[in-house]
Image 1 (cartoon, helix red, strand yellow):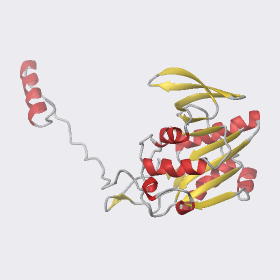
Image 2 (cartoon, rainbow, N blue to C red):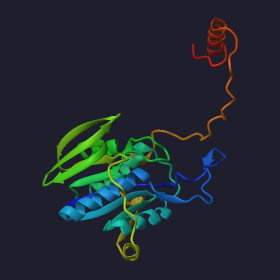
Image 3 (cartoon, helix red, strand yellow):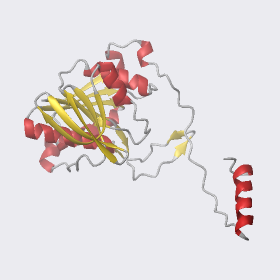
Image 4 (cartoon, rainbow, N blue to C red):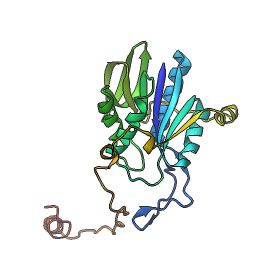
Length: 255
């Protein structure tokens, strides 16, 4: 089975995020595999170990993304394709077009990815790719069973479970709990250094300017305001209720 894993490199969720001029300051930040994508990598490797096949990482990002790709290779992925982009602003629309253009040139039975990236949390790219490729999309997967030309997926639906059956090829987005990603072994790390990594530029792809042009623009990023100390209402219950209503109407402006 040929499995593609869409993987993004994001900042470590343990890092303290600081902003400079409305942008995330990347100085000194450690970058890792997007945690949800790591579940997708692990699931792809498990399927390969059980049924045979090949796992290819497909990624879009700056050249530093290679470190995350090599980690995925050390886990057991076989090869990778990196579309390098250092400066061109992209959004979910353009990212989906770029990744779909790469995928269309590959042989694949199954595409795995994380259900969202922790840096933007938009959870849009996998669905868009499924639409562009004309294949089913199954989100928030917590269990995947692939057999022959079919796949059965258990997906989390806000605390409940839905079971979906589909015919390959499909794109499946991994939710936390799908598996427990392995740590790369020392032999795996050594082998990863020699595994093939194909580098592409956006200009290498058969895409028009309109397909790469983002539909949204990031104006600024800012931290939420610091929480103010709470207020304790005193007096009789009827007086507290009246004061609460006045505060909600005049200060919080929610009624």
